[in-house]
Structures are given as C-alpha cells and as structure tokens.
Image (tube, rainbow, N blue to C red):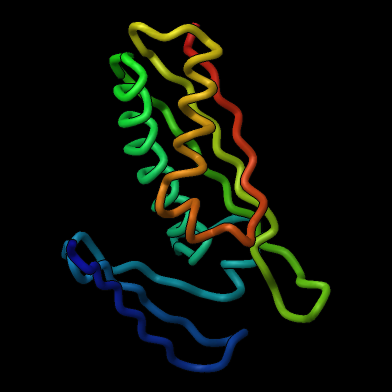
Length: 146
C-alpha cells in the first residue's frame, strides 16, 4: 500500500510566525498556516491541522460508508459528509482536539433509515482515520436525505 507525504515549513515564533503546508504526494497545493489564525474563529485564508484532519476524515468516512453500504446490499447514489474538528485548551496544558462531529446525509437505494445508520456506524468504526483518532470523541449524525 502507498505512503503519502505532506511537508511543512515554519518561520518565527508561535504567535508571530507563519508557515506553509504542502500536499507533496499529490502536488495539489501549498497552503498558509498561522497559529493566531488557527485559534481564531475566522481562518482568513489560512488552513490548520484541524481543517486538514477534517478533510481527511470526511473523505475517508465517505469511502468507508460507500463500502459499508455495498456490503449490506445497498447502492450509494450520493453521500454528503461534513466533518467538524474542535480545538481547545488541554487541562494538562497546551491544546488538544476536543471533538469530531461527522454529519452525513445519503441518497441510497436498497436501504432503510436503520440500515443506513448502522452502515454509517460501521464506517465510523472502521474508517482508518477514525481508527487513528481514537483519543478524540467522534459523534455521528447519519440520516437518509429526504
């Protein structure tokens, strides 16, 4: 199986410094990072480790859910996945990821609501990114689209 690479560069101190993160394996881009923007409500054109984790988790979960739906006889037409990753103070010092909220709405043939929710729970448990983030509470809100 492949290994993927990202690279980061940082200049300056935590509060006054800045950096860039590069998606090196895909060559899809280089993005600015900043600690003050990381901890602010508005990103203002920068990304953060939490946003990158959210992107990875939403993509991984969507793939895992599509596989789980197929495994129980359903057919995925469309999945809409949103991942929210929270950052907050760590009681032991510094910061930590406080939670991950996964929200998925699915357009699926061949499954009822209960079967879809169970497939989503299975995907949450078996997605490699979910497995890597076991120290963070992951909440799931799954439903078929109306």
